[in-house]
Image (cartoon, rainbow, N blue to C red; front, side, top):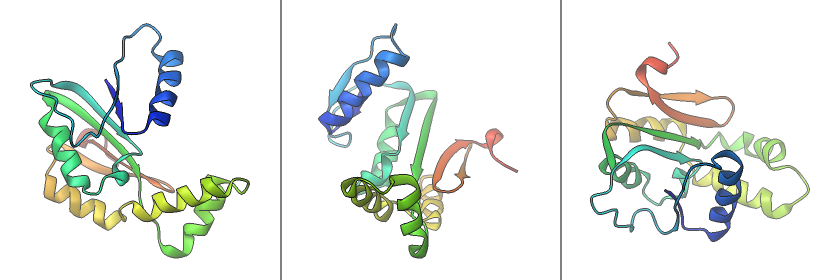
Length: 152
């Protein structure tokens, strides 16, 4: 199942899935993840890629992911983290380009909405995802991994 509250992003997902997962059946669902009723449905794998910073309460989103995960399942979370204020213009130039002002504005808003590295650490201490650790991917991303896959 692929879920997003944005029709545009679901259309992008359909196109990407056609190229990558041509032989698999994927259900696409336009919905608010926190409001969606999964009933008894459980998942082996949950992927949250560059999305968590869009949630008003990322902790609730992660707790919901945990609640719909099958025992022994895996959650993959990768997102941006908010850099120091002084470097944001550099990130915007490097990662959003210079041509489209809308893209630069959206990227800046995403950076400002994301959590700082310290806020990520606090969030994951509260949630206590067993057997996991935070990995930082220079220069702008963070992910949650199994402990045996962490940098030492």
